[in-house]
Image 1 (cartoon, one colour):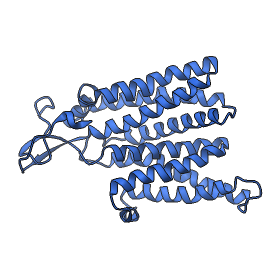
Image 2 (cartoon, one colour):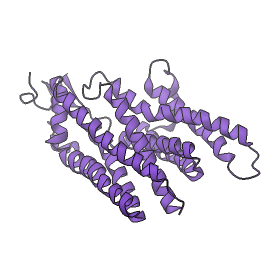
Image 3 (cartoon, one colour):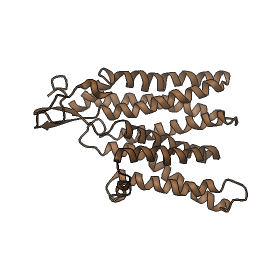
Image 4 (cartoon, one colour):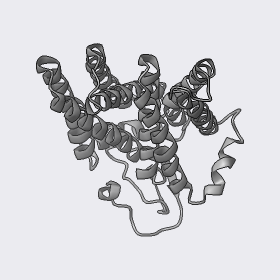
Length: 304
């Protein structure tokens, strides 16, 4: 059965076809986005000893990612229950990594002020543990998608790699922006790293699309929705056009003329593109299904 002949169906129609998942949308995209960017920011900040970046990273993960998860769950008391299946669930592992990251990260940043009650040795030790937890946060969203066998587009080893690469890109981008806004000297090699990660990410996204088109019909449908369907404006124009092409141009300008304005603008375009990449990939997740209770038909235009 080809994707061209198989209609998209609603959640309760008596039809055999390819249905789009409807549970994960804005809030989960926000949780993925804030988690990867925040953890990536901490990783880069720890490596270059950028204290402001480490503090902001903890706020992004603890407040922004945490709030997105809480709002999605609806009841805050459900959040601790997510750790129960850590042996088999990447969601549980991610939640545990988030708790460890925040707890150890707080001890790490508590050692920043001179004369702090936390010694340098203790602060550094907890900082390394937080770094390990941050690395788990950077990849776990990709592994969550990889474990969704019912949605072929996500069920690929490319997803953790895409998540990790975008985490490093987001972390590098926010580090450069914070350094520019704080009037601290930026490291030229970080801008070159940002440039290289942008090129790597466009290659990874292209690989995801090419491999999706060579796999099963549900993956082909998802890829078509990204490039020619109702998600195309967000994916092609915003995630790729703004997030990668415009950011590449702005980073090139910043490297050429040492422009702070171009550097900050590149940060904005990159972060906007990153969010809509996650959102687009989530919204086109499709799986074959059979629904038995007839209700109003699903409209593909409602994707956005």
